[in-house]
Amino acid sequence: MMENRPDILQDVEKIVHLLQSRELDNKKSRWQQLADRVLAGHRLSQEEALEILQSPEDQLVELLSAAYRLRRHYFGHQVQVNFLINAKSGLCGEDCAYCSQSAVSKAPIPKYPLVSKERILQGAELAMVHRANTYCIAISGRSPADREVDQLAEAVRQLKSRYPLKVCVSIGLLSRPQADRLKQAGVDRINHNLNTSARFYPRICTTHSYQDRLATLEAVRAAGLEICCGGLLGMGEKDEDVVDLALELARLEVAAIPINFLNPIPGTPLEGVWRLTPRYCLKALCLFRFAVPKAELRMAAGREIHLGPLQPLGLYPANSLFVGGYLTTRGRDPQEDFQMIEALGFEVVSHGVHLFP
Ligand code: SF4
Image 1 (cartoon, rainbow, N blue to C red):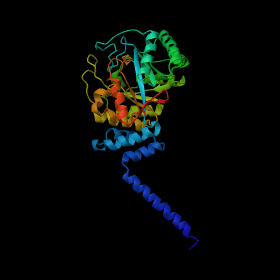
Image 2: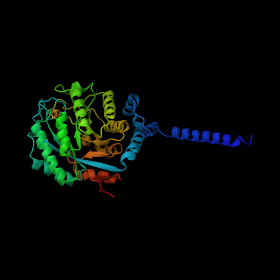
Image 3: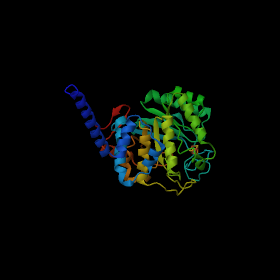
Image 4: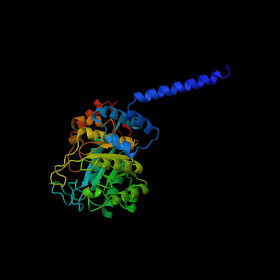
């Protein structure tokens, strides 16, 4: 009997420990429990993803808190700032319904061919002034001409020798040789957004396909470049489309996810389409954090008009934002963003330097 006692005590201890941890789990919200599982390597299922997006409003704080745990685990209190230049505007032959630069848009936007190397270098200077970690160079169009890729590669070579900026290039459908040339020039990352699900894609664009976009992402990966690939919410897609996109991005293991909220620019086919609420936008950000927990998750275009006064809460799931504006629309004053970041107790990380204590 005495000989067995230590074993019995050990068993009792194990049971008590198990019960205590079960009790703890019961006290934890379902979102915190899901965060535990994601931190342990669980990949979000379709059902779980949909539950996040359709979670009751009175669970929003719990959901944000759980998403924040994931963000804090991988990024601490750091905020990555991105600065964008539209290096070629309008003049596009594609028909993306959301885009003011498309062939079917009547939006009165500036239209110009690829800007000079000097202008791209000036943009890099502005990115430094705006404390950006990443300088994003975008050009309109289905895909770039080889001549444009060479011009951009030369500009990137020079800016990399002058500035400690990460460079992300967003220039449409790319072939493998084009991706290789950009990689050799020092480009770190290519942005190419899937925007929505494969199912909904034909509703927003008929001149190229979701598969075309996936092929570009494959070329980018094969060239050894990081993938930045995001979404655009509020175009009339279903929750299931947002879920499919999130799970696709998880499958692709993308490095960065910009989430755009539709700005229904007058003159575009989606003019007047307003479907998002601030709380839905927050749930969507949480979904992408849960689905791809290690990715740089960015609040992108439309955050000002759709999240409104709830913008600061977006930085609990997200750890990245654009400052200074977007392709054809202006953002808010960057000082307001820096004040928001400081008020949250977060820090801008720029070139490895922490800019707020
Ligand atoms: S999103 Fe790109 S490809 Fe589509 S219309 Fe706009 S510029 Fe053209």
